[in-house]
Amino acid sequence: MAGNKSTDFSHLPLATNKAMECALTGSELLSCTYLNKGSAFTEEERDEFDLVGLLPSNVQTLDEQVKRAYAQFSTRPDNLAKNTFMTSLKEQNEVLYYRLIQDHLKEMFPIIYTPTEGEAISKYSSLFRRPEGCFLNVNEPEKVEQSMSQWGGPDDIDLIVVSDGEQILGIGDQGVGGILISIAKLAIYTLCAGIHPHRTLPVVLDTGTNNEDFLNDEIYLGLHQERVRGEKYDKLVDTFVKTARKQYPNAYIHFEDFGLPNARRILDEYTPKIACFNDDVQGTGCVTLAAIYAALKVAKLEMKDIRIVMYGAGTAGTGIADQVADAIAVESDKSREEALKQIWCVDKPGLLLQSMKDDLTPAQHPYAREDEEWKGKKHDNLLEIVKEVKPHILIGTSTKPKAFTEEVVKEMAKHTERPIIFPLSNPTKLHEADPKDLFKWTEGKALMATGSPFDPVEYNGTKYVVAECNNSTTFPGIGLGAVLSRTKLMSPPLLVAATKALAEQAPALKDPNDGLLPDVTNVREISVKIAAAVIKKAKEEKLTQQEGIPDNDEDLEKWIRAQMWDAEYRPLKKVEHTRASRAAKGEAGSKGKRSKKTN
Ligand SMILES: NC(=O)C1=CN([C@@H]2O[C@H](COP(=O)(O)OP(=O)(O)OC[C@H]3O[C@@H](n4cnc5c(N)ncnc54)[C@H](O)[C@@H]3O)[C@@H](O)[C@H]2O)C=CC1
Ligand SMILES: CC(=O)C(=O)O
Image 1 (cartoon, helix red, strand yellow):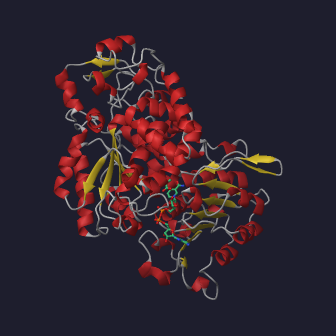
Image 2 (cartoon, protein in one colour; image 1 turned 90 degrees about the horizontal axis):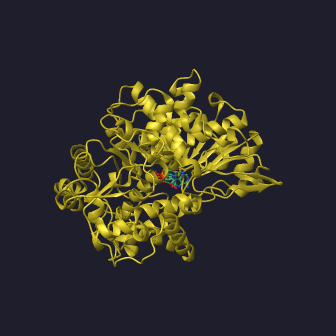
Image 3 (cartoon, rainbow, N blue to C red; image 1 turned 135 degrees about the vertical axis):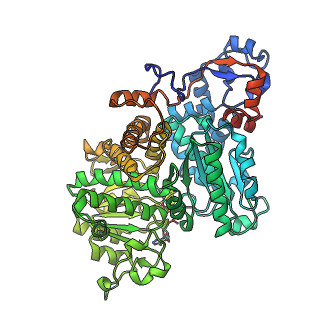
């Protein structure tokens, strides 16, 4: 794990190895998740902070606590129960929560993220115990300022993840339960890129829901009304963005799981104005493009020659297509228009055609093909499209399980030696194909990456690693770069730099049977590389607002590591009630957020 002890960057504003100020004592301290150490409070701390008699006598280490917590986790009967256990641990002791996950990353990632988090989100209202995050109501835009002011002063928040809950993972409209995707993505920022957990803010925009089950369920916690569209919706988004800029001017804004009608529109509106990012469009685009780069190397193909079918041309599908089109144009001497011709986008009605123009989203328009090209050919069926296009690459972001049938895959394999196939729809049950089947149908030739994790596949005695192509390998590093450089914008060259940094880490470049993307267990170091690439590019583009960023690569990486939060207990420094009680009340810093939540 990246450590920050061997560096001399402790003067940095975000250096995380400092003592923590604490004015709480006794049971208040025990119930403050970001300060609580439970049985690990030392004898001295127990005396100093009035904890005597409130804890069993054996002072334990964090490692011992992790052992116990892992044993408790393991007794939970199913994944959802494990997810609930983790949520509750996070409410009690954040350091322990993050350390436990870090020590069991591969096992726990699918519990706190996709696929299990999807189930937790769909049951948000019934599982609800304690609120976390900021809830903004579309009917009360005048209260946005007050609602968002509860999380500290202007320097206290580095990163906001916001969702309107309309298109969560592949499970659709989850209304106010969308707060949990903002929370989960922030936990991943902390785990994978060491973003300080107390300096982040999860937000949900409650703009109603079109999920009938929720509308008919009195237990549902969000607004019982259909989704608001148009001016009123835009006003809430704009009020949120403006308030965030005013109250937390350093905060980088990550848009997550907005619905198709809004995701791209909002991104296009704010990208030229503020440092923001849409994970489904850009994060997915970057990670998928990085996996494509690795696959092309293994398949000995070149970007300029590829033909690619995107199955499911929604937010993620068009986001990926755009990144691929840019890459083709950059890697060849083709114009972007020519590059677009190498991408065939398919959605519910079939291949996108010019004659469908009125029904296409602005993001889909550039991919609509001339009807003339397809005259007399079948374009409403994936098999026929594959027969005609003979793609090298097939990517699924359709939420249609099993759409990549044996026939489709075998047809593809007839025309290309190493079919590159990425079923990316989440959660696992929505994947367009199972890796085992893809291997069987292509006799071990397929080069694969999947949206959720899969175990390695054995075929004819050889073990193949199936890379997880999830934006979680990418967005944390990009965010770390954005936060540390205080970039004014997240411009396209920064994303290209991030993609290349990730692509260079692909294990398949060394061993073709290994993953097309690096494993999540190495993700903190990958994030350092991605962040370094983003920061360097931001400097080149004159976008940075942070002073003192080192020029030299080695120092830059040290500088980054020194500012990454590690899950370890820090000494507590007793402070007078005035300053810290303001913090505890949410008046003097993001620490207040945690206290507010737990007190
Ligand atoms: N692996 C990763 O990192 C990511 C995976 N995803 C996954 O991709 C999927 C799509 O997500 P979004 O693009 O955000 O949703 P979206 O709703 O914006 O897009 C889905 C698209 O698929 C189309 N579609 C639905 N049924 C289809 C069918 N039978 N044939 C062809 N197209 C069909 C829809 O009309 C829509 O255009 C989800 O399952 C999501 O979990 C999304 C982002 C990142
Ligand atoms: C990974 C992700 O963002 C999704 O499945 O939507």
